[in-house]
Image 1 (cartoon, rainbow, N blue to C red):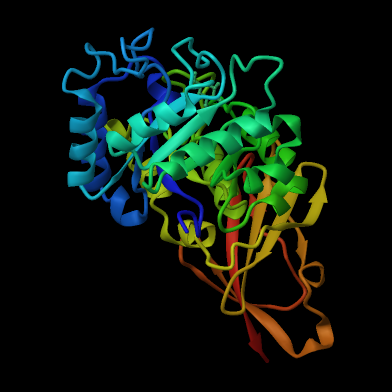
Image 2 (cartoon, rainbow, N blue to C red):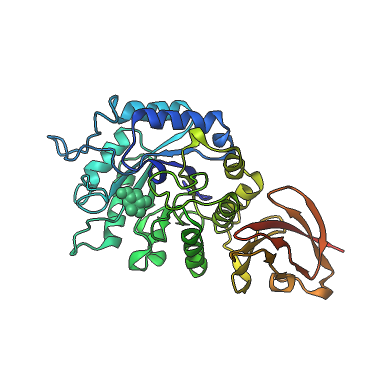
Length: 373
Ligand code: GLA
């Protein structure tokens, strides 16, 4: 299976939009390896929209923009593979892509073959310019079949923004991850809206097909294609912790070549990534929600639990979680031995509740081992 746990990688869109090139992709692949992101689990390098010529070539095939990609896509894919990484590209189920380049509608089989010939391992497949008469679910099934028909393992990253109530059918249509929200922008309101919109949809994500909450904006600080406002480090912490707790794919969206130390460390935080990649892949539940304070908890493998405390309010406050809401009763003879996931600090035994003090828009994530007392 291609997607036993949520896919991880880098995608060009959030920061670079149409401003992409062979050089950018090679340098980003180099940075993924040199700065330790590949070792942390990020292995897909994905070129989003705006990579092709404005029209198909004389054989009806998609063709790379020669100014942006002078050596062609196969050479670039070979380079990415030579770094031990996987290569991703983008198309759209409509007649044009969202940025108005040729889409794959009624060219699915020939385009899938083109991608396979270029050594593509991941296809993000968008939803713009879909003819009214065409059924979106069928178009995703069709591209999934076309990719499978090439004989190459190509992960299908569907991107219909959760429209047409896609949660219940994306898995059967063949997607390996599916955008279950609209587009993210780089501010806390967007992060919060996306996260809260997912709470009752997380049941659709599991090995084989995960809810995709969109590419990360961590480290953008307001710069780039979707850099509308920017976030501070506390807000990026909450963003990354939410995406990890919620089993979302982790696709870095900033310029990794110039990332700050804080953002690089956050994106490589072993504890948070281990929750996101936990083999049990269980979704979280809301253990507590009072005003703008949320505690999300989830079961992990090996008798462990994660509890994420999120303060979405504008002022510092204590975020409560009653451990009985996670399942622990007072007379059970058990307690949680808690560790702060981001700092590694050992917090001791907890039996009744946790209520860490948390700054505005910040969070804490605890991992609890259930132990007999
Ligand atoms: C849509 C997608 C984005 C991005 C753009 C590219 O808006 O949701 O993630 O791929 O198209 O044009």
